Length: 302
Image (cartoon, rainbow, N blue to C red; front, side, top):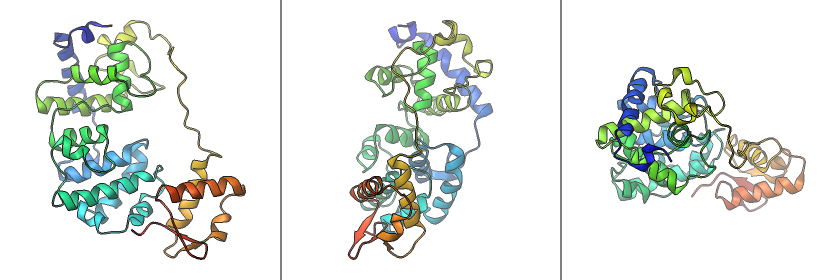
């Protein structure tokens, strides 16, 4: 264990903050959800969309979404199927349903304004610890540990001295993230955004650019000679031929149709009938597709 984790008050913790935040000030991407006019709702929408989806795919959908639904109440007034339709090909479309559910709850419980409290955010449907912390930090400048994949990788390398974090977030990682938090709210919020950006642009999964890293001289993994990953195999992101691909094809047909779609039309999207039926049943079970009488299907309306 490094000195950083042995004593959370160690001055070395603070040594990490300034160079990363200074780097972020100079190199941060100009993203719409980081601008002042994005507001808390814009931050929340971005956090839902960016889960497991790269920025370049999110940008056009985000802009269209906020133009159509600039406030939670605007989205809440629509059928959940419209959220699924507007989600397009971002993937993992249950996120669209969860965002719609959160918008309904915000409208009903909080007068249409995204709540400021971490506990209130966490109580919204579809919002977990990460999203609640991210919205509280990025929208309201609060002090929370925001642990996404990029941040976990930066902490794993810089502090723990390993190439990759565990496949699933551990209690030890959460503890370390809390220990590394700056004391002041504003600085902590900057640190959260800066460490995330560092992992996204410099300390990447496959092509880390240590020569560009502001904390390379303090990085435990680099100083140890970059030892190879020794933990469980990294999970791949296979897609072709999976149920996910079939689900995506079925949803694409339903998104493109304003009228209910006959079973026969859906049958054309995938030749293998057992997998196709399984994928369609899964969409129905997840609330993404609504079956109607006469073998018709549509996006959910209520």
